[in-house]
Image (tube, rainbow, N blue to C red):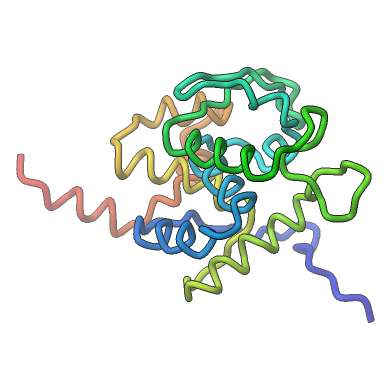
Length: 197
């Protein structure tokens, strides 16, 4: 019997963001000897883009980008323009990866090992994220989409980024959609109620 890893039609399976900074650092440490996977993880958690958009980046898209510069990409799902930023965290790993691997400009940045210059698939990336989280004993439901959510969660919690900026970044039309993305928990709302005014 063929194993089906997809959620049945009509059902939803929400994946979680990685909430704890220590867990993020543990995954970075886990991936420290694999520059491709470390770059993929860091680029994802620092940009909040869909996995498919990140996986379809070519080397030429980023090889000349300087630290703190942005490039415009066209989202594969929506056809809308969005930006990708190479902040200092990503830049350092990007340079190490490119210098170590010396890929051709036409190659995908995250090339599949199956050859023919194909990018990693979203499902393979999802399996990688599950493995990384399991390897650091992180309980919960995680996939490649978790890294998009991690960006939003960390922006809100660590940096106090406003919900309207997150909504704009994700092209969401309502607060409730973004609230689910952020992984807002009731205990956080309760904690806010304890703040004296």
